[in-house]
Image (cartoon, helix red, strand yellow):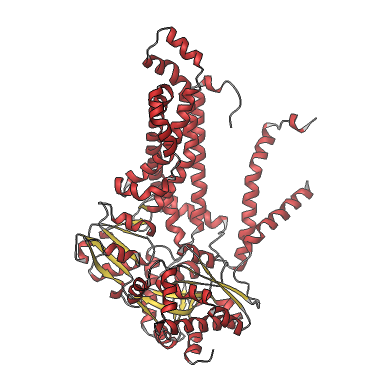
Length: 273
Length: 353
């Protein structure tokens, strides 16, 4: 049988999926072992055990100074920032995207502007965000919005444009108003694609969240990483990176599951990764 | 199957080999690398490389020394700690927390200067240090700024509990000061003078209030130095040749350093004015042997321990040992990782290099 026709069983698929992860851990453990042979206190590649201890200390032992459980405080604050930023970005994408995609005059006015705006690297205009929104939460959320919204607006507008012209003409023939067409025709077509845009937007959103927290902050996952980087505490940084990756993965899967439940018609076709 | 496991293990070992190469290879070698970052007291390192003075001294001892500038200060220390470099310029505090705390035995080869006003606390619309109570203070956490704040608060009977510290990147400090909700910052030059120049800003405390406590040093790997004394001799010899040029006011050398740090001769001289440079090896030796140094390092160790950054499982500030020129030690004598050793500077003072 040709290789393209041989499908792995469930167990094999799971094992194959785990293999690269296990290999990474193995390579790490070997490298860490040899470094620690030279210097038992090596900070660059700490042992898995000391990372576990550090993670436990962050998650379960109250901080000496503030009495907080640092991991959970950091996680809650970061997720709140990420959530607020993405909520605003999604709302903007929905309203502006439909307006741009559906109403030619709005498209002419805004499409070139947003296309240009989306190309500005957001980090470069940070000082302006600071002066406008202050150094608190607002500027961090603003950075996430500026970084993700323009692209999400564009992809939503494109989703509206991709609606077959025939369907719109049919709705018009049946006497639908613009508002009726938006609620009954455009939204069902666009919402699942908006969710996809949101899932893709989360990738840069995490990057902007971490950068924003690195710049001026008192809590947050990015804050902690940049703080302990000052003394090369990789035993704290690496578990935090794994934790962030896990959170991002779970969020992504959650949104996918939500999309599958809510917009069944959108997932009738092919496999999705 | 067994074969492929063996293969995979070999591959893993091969992949991890570059990572497991370590700093502490002490065999005889002739090529050395040291790193530095932009700071008023370290600009001579760049000049040493560009002017060929370093090469001259390295040739004299039959070795090769490369001086590399790294744009990010903390990253340069991390690179040194990871073993990429044989030496690196850093402060006494960061030397204790990063390489020494990370088990890399480190020697203070050249004590170059101490901050004598280069680090300071600025308040907006207030004029007394005591007014800082209850404010949010923007600074680079766990840096010398943080240490300066802790020492300053001691002088007016306050502690960090009386205020909120906000970690703020040095790159964004000036923009941060321009926002209304930022009322106090702790930072270093040239940012400090930039912020102080704004109309509502008052400098209420600076490092001249704790002279000799924020020290800028060329730190080198102890084992590398012990195995290759010529490395230390070449660095020290070259350094004091440039110090001689600076002390005599050599305009060419000073201008080159000024431009490399992004300012002009006047700006650079203004920064030198708040830096106590040790232009002669004798001054540096005297400072290193002074009885104040152990007291300073005790303050620093206690500060680092209090902030929880002296390494995991550090049971007390004495966890990492520090040895001083008179043979005395602070902290654990079985875990001495930071050594103040003036012997190379003494050779320069006696002119025997």
